[in-house]
Length: 391
Image 1 (cartoon, rainbow, N blue to C red):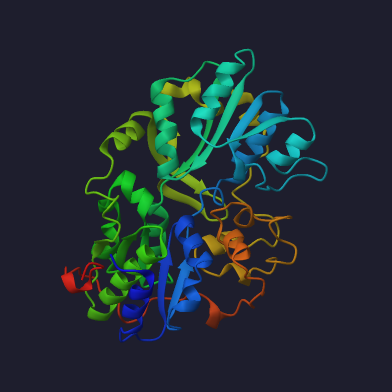
Image 2: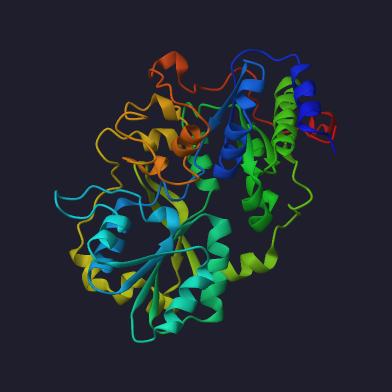
């Protein structure tokens, strides 16, 4: 197994043209890239673009409003920690996040695992609990397992689960996706199988590699997609074989399909993406907080996925701008006083960039933005072992 230094040397030896844009769609990947300083170590011709890798960042504003409203009605609202501080637009004087609702007396509790919700509900059977479950496939699999095992009667779920690949498909179906190669998420591929990403090279001719989470693993995947671009032979390369297997985790997939339907879903600031959301199946509707508290759903103020005024999180999520090109970055918006969700979540690109030391605000100019594909894109896929990360 090659070290990060060895992969860097191999990348630097490649005959690279200018303007190579590679998107990653995993908050864990972006954290490794930023914290390890990989952007500074790579040739200047390579741009690494953070994409839609933060489920908290795209959670619809109406779901946050509903969670806050439920917490204020006297039940116990539990959620993963980073959801508590995600802000939404609210009238002056009203709480704009679960953390603010908690500050005025609502029973809001952070949890680290779906099982924590069950343990809390069983410990207080006289109280009503709602688990606000937001996440991608790797998070929704254990949530599905929890439902399949059976939950206490006093626990309902407010599900805001999303699938990763439809957002990438949406970007690739536009006239200017803004990237020529893709680093696919390793943990999602572990659950759903690497085949889920085959459409990227097959249908769009985009070089693709599944990566692990170490600097060497990410650089191996980057080397693979760069080689694919050079030889003009896009393929799907599994550079995380120690965990990602053909077919994925069949048992996890079976549980997901047993409790959830795949539906069109809203992504905050982006709009509706077809077949991109998890919804509790009709026969399990009694567990669905939207059904159990239908009167609250009807009365809560619904919004069309809007970000706070001036917030460019949606553009960051789509890879249209870099985090420090948002006019609020480091000014009105910081981890202590976040305006948008990308500065709240540990998987948000803005929070990751700030934590890695990026303090300079960069003007949002057309020449600096992630741009359209170059001439290296092809529409057919040819498998060439020389382009793989094992080559």
